[in-house]
Length: 154
Image (cartoon, rainbow, N blue to C red; front, side):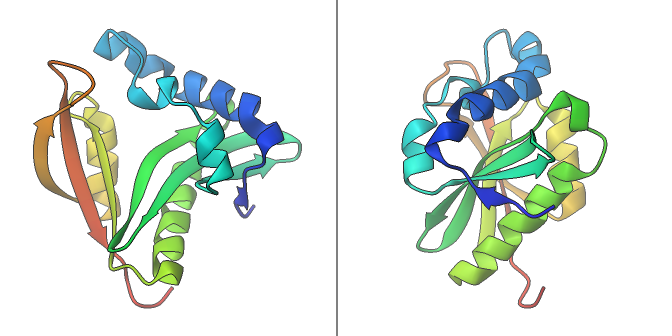
């Protein structure tokens, strides 16, 4: 199962998987996380979304932005029916491969400080915390910035 670039006709499935994947955090945070409220149409047009499919079903996705000095993971979402199968790790591996192909030295991401399970997962994968900052769109929310150097060879 190798990720493929999203197409315009994938929009509804992207929104559905993102919403269900982040649903537990909506209760934790008291409002939907930013990826749930995102407009994915421009991101599809810019080629920033890759999908993991199992048969005809969307199992997971990653939203990855290319920047001059890094790749930024905006979102990783795995459909609840596919969670526990290490698809999130597969998507993180894909992000690192993309960053390497783009010739950038690191992959960055940010997450909500209250998403402790995600922070621990990213740390176990090799990301290190680089700072914390106020979320500019959600007063009272704190973002945790993390980065991981890209290894030279796959």
